[in-house]
Amino acid sequence: ALKKNDVIIVAGDVADSITETVKELERIAAAYKTVLYIDGNHEYSEELYKKDGDITAFDDNLRVAISHLPNVHFLKDGPVTIDGTAIIGRNGHWDYKALEGASVEDAQAAIMDKIRLPLSDATIFSDQAKKDVADLKQLVKDLNADPDIHSIFVVTHTLPGKDLMPARVKGAPPVFSNLGNSEMADVLTEDTGAKIKNWVFGHWHGYHSASLNGVEYNCHPRGTPRPGKPEYTVLEVEVKTAAKTAAPKPQAPKPPAP
Image 1: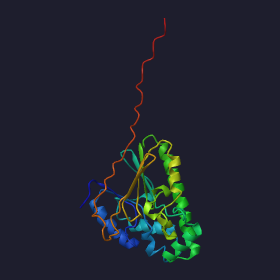
Image 2: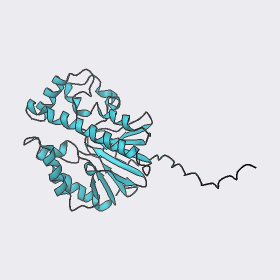
Image 3: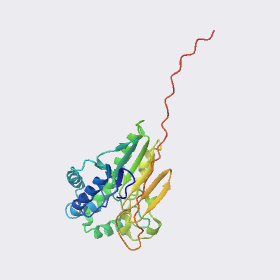
Image 4: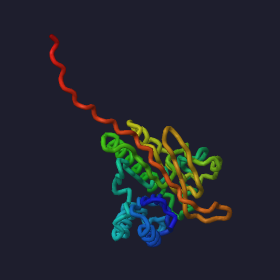
């Protein structure tokens, strides 16, 4: 009902289960021509937090669950290109290093206690965090080499780097170390053509925006109702595309000098 165009980005944490997430994606898919979705940590609650932490199994189960929604694109399955802009995404997870002043050991203990998983499972998330960074770096490298791609739009669930951490979490307890992936900023090292213009993320429960190194970052959550939260309005992100350089016109050879 609030849409401004035909494309919507859903950056994770839709609900506390795949089942409820799919119900919401069905509603969204009925309203939008194209739904670009990446999973958040809350979607895992039904499986990952109650079983052995098999993220691959989660991905497969999610794909089956949304297979009847052809206009919902799980960004983990590859880029979606619209008018020369490639949209790519990964959850991002966390590496327990995004919060200044908190040791990895303290962060692991606090977060595993919060989500009721044994401490031995802590590396499930940091291993996946590294893989998500590696995947995005390779995608950005490949897309920079593609002359048909003029700009890259990145979507992650968690905050993509320490510089994006909101000021209010400075000095926060170690449990807040799962807000972001400190190594995600390394993705920009593969952006040799400066094609990344926009990056949106979820996870953070409030609005957050910043402009860093030529990239516009935005977090604009729909959910997490709480007292005093402003009424939700749609954030429309305008993609900045680099002008495509026109090929030089062929010229007739000059006649030989007399």
